[in-house]
Length: 504
Image (cartoon, rainbow, N blue to C red):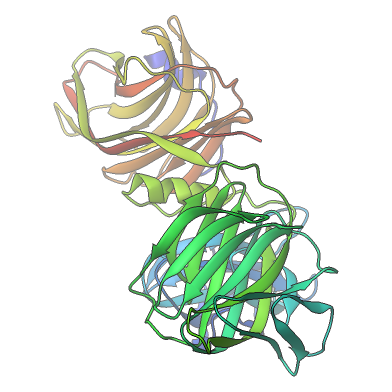
């Protein structure tokens, strides 16, 4: 086992460090706002933001000249939740957090600082979904919006007007000149809906000819998500209610986050449902529709105030920090939204497990013995009990297991030691290795992402390193790591594995 420490190479530090600042008084920031400010060397400015739980936001600080190298931190109270210095260095020194999910409804602080001796002006933006604004239509002029089916459409004066009359009639408004999008967050502000005999308003996305996905809201406070192809409608999420929706509400915001075959649905920035389709993803346009009820004099009038579309920034952002949650589906969703993984299906979820060993070396216990996995994410919270207080021991996750002498172990140990290493016979190959100082006490959350491009390791939500490795099918398990003989018990809670449905 001593070979493990001598063969592994040191790889960086785990946590992002920011200099101490003198904080300016906090200023209120509206959701989805863009503001300007200035920071002096050694100083910072705070902005206060209120957001609902489940909202997906991107926060970016961009310097207005080369004099400033900005830093960014998101705080809840005095606790720093996420932070970033240079998200794409050396291409840019700007700071950003993309597609983060707000953990709770409440008030947060966005802190903008200046790295080192830099100082200067900046632009701070809080965007829904992703960090790049790709389309914003405020309908100030007629534009190219045209009526379809039974609708009357007018665009201008800051709104898109859609009117439909008759029994169970559908009308639409579309723009043939609009760009097409595959991965995006689209948000529309429904300014006013009026109708007799009930109504439905809808936003259509990925529209190509007669094919589209449709997010519908009706007067009863229900929503539905369907795939349409000509006259055929496939219901992906049937009519349902949510506590965020009040029946009869006539002003609201609808949003859709689309990633490959996954769709997250939002109402007033609150996540109300997620849908996965089986059809391949494709790029398409956006349009709007309204439908009347079954009354003889049924009619509906709807106004769309703004259509906003955001897409991922380029170059892509590799997340240095992640939210850590105990729910496997939510954690898998966080990885996908942050752009770290493709869609995943929860293949394993074990609430509690443990392994005990007194011998020196790595003692592995395979889980789900009949299953093998190739590309996946695996996570668990782990703590340990040792025979004596300062015993050189730790615990880990086993992946790519072929037999008792061939596997990869990702570990965290007393003294703050952590790493990832592949074992072949009695040799542990050099991989990820580092030391946390001061060593934090357990429990720790260990997260491993195994892809064709390599293995990414996170400890307590912070990036620990990447190991280049071939993605090979193998089993998974847990392990005790004893640098010397010691009676060690490793306890694991909420161990889960999400297998990726595709790598493209």
